[in-house]
Length: 107
Figure 1 (cartoon, one colour):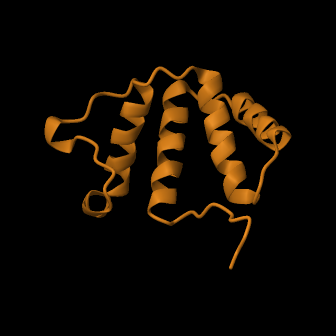
Figure 2 (tube, one colour; figure 1 turned 135 degrees about the vertical axis):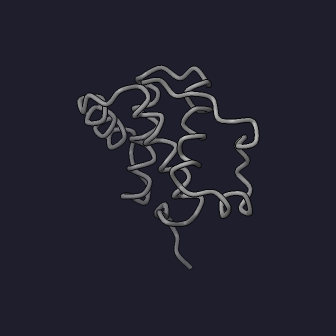
C-alpha cells in the first residue's frame, strides 16, 4: 500500500492558516507522501524519527541517545510508508505545538 499523490487542490502548504483548515489525518497523509518523494532511505527515516523523539524527550540528546532510539525504530519492523507517516505526523504535531521540543534554557 504505497502513498499516493494528493489531489491538486490539496497541495501541501505548511503555513499556520492552512494547517488550521485541514484535518490532521489529511495533513499527515499529504506530508508523508511528499516526504516519501524526497528519496530518503529506510535508515535515514529511522534516524530522523529517532532524532525527533529524543529531542522531545531530552533537552540535548547525544548522538548515542539518538543512535539507540534509531536502532529501536529500525528493529520495530515499520514499513517505509509507516516511517514517512510517523515522521510527518510528529513534524506536524510539533508545528501545531501539540508536541514541544525540550528547550535547553527556559527563561
